[in-house]
Length: 380
Ligand code: GDD
Ligand code: MG
Image (cartoon, rainbow, N blue to C red):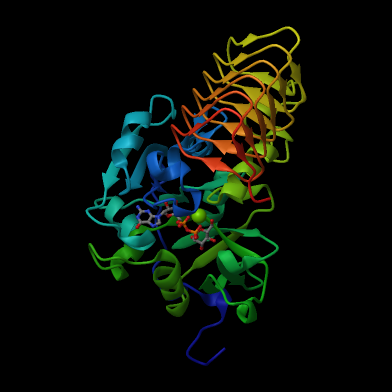
C-alpha cells in the first residue's frame, strides 16, 4: 500500500459522518439487460419476468425487499421490453410493494442506470441485480451499512470460480480493498464475489456523469476504493445464484425443489414433494416422482410419468403415456400422447405432437411446434 493510501481502518475518517434517514428507503432493481444468455426464452420474456414455477422471478426479489420495512417503493430500471414487464407486473399488486418504472432512453450500463433511476432521491438506495436468487437477510445488511456509517455496502458471496463475476478483495475490518470485474485467471486472489446487492448513498453518484453509459462494477466501485471512501463488505454464506444462463435457470428450480434454497412452495418441512398450485386434472394412473410442480389448471393424462425435478406451468397438458423428466414447461404448453421430454426447457404455448422426443439441454422458445415422431436429441 502506497503512502498516499490511508490504512483501511481509517477509511472515511476524513469525510463527514453520514446522517441516514431511518424512515425511508427506495429499492432499485436493475432489470434492463437483454438476457442474451437465456435466449430464446428471453426474446419475448425479459429476464425479470421469466417464471420460477408460476411466478415472475422478480417477485422472489420483492419478497426479500418486503423484509425491510423502510422500503416503500421498488423502482424497476428498464430498457429492454419494458412493455412486457409493465403488462405483467403493473403497479405491483402481486409484488407486495408499489412498483414504479424508469425506462432509460438508451442502455446506460449498471452505473448510469442506477443514477438515472434514482434522480431526486437523497436517501439510502438498496440496489438489486435483477437476476440473483438468494436467501439474504436484508435487514442485517441495512444494519451493517448504518453501524459502519458506510457510503456504500456491497454483499459478497463465496463461489468456486470468480471469473464470471466481480471479484472483491476485503481487509480484516470488512472494507473493500479491490474490485475487479470478470477477472482473468491470474488475477483471482480470493473467492468472494459481488452478489449484485448494494446499499448506496446517492451523494456518491456525483462521479457518475448524467445520461452516459457507466459501469457500477468497472468504474463506480473502483473509484470508491481509490478515494478511500467507507466501502463496506457484507459476506453472506447463504444460498446465492445468478439465474442468467439456461443451466443456472434450471438449477434454480432444482435447488428450490430440493430445498437447497429454502424458499418458495417447497420450502417448509411439511411441503409435499408433488406440489399442486391449484386445481389440476390428473388421471388416476398417472405417476409422479417428486419433486415436481403442477401449475393451476394443468392436465396429466393416463399412464403419463412426471418427474423428478419437473415443472408444469399453469394450463399445461401432458398426454397419455408421455414421459417428462427434469424438465420445465412454461404455461399453456401442450405435450401430446407418448412424447418423451428429458432435461429440457419449453417456453409458453409450445406444442409437441404425439411420440415426439426432446433430449437434454434443448430449449424451445415460446410457440414452438415439434411434429409427430420428431426427435430433438439435444447436446448433453
Ligand atoms: N437498467 C439497466 N440498464 N440494467 C442493466 C443494464 C443497463 O444498461 N445492463 C445490465 N443491467 C442489469 C441486468 O438486467 C442485470 O439484472 C444486472 O444489471 C446485471 O447485469 P448482468 O448482465 O446479469 O451482469 P453479470 O451477471 O455478467 O455480472 C453482474 O452480476 C454479477 C452477480 O450475478 C456484475 O454485477 C458482477 O459484478 C456480479 O458478480
Ligand atoms: Mg447476471
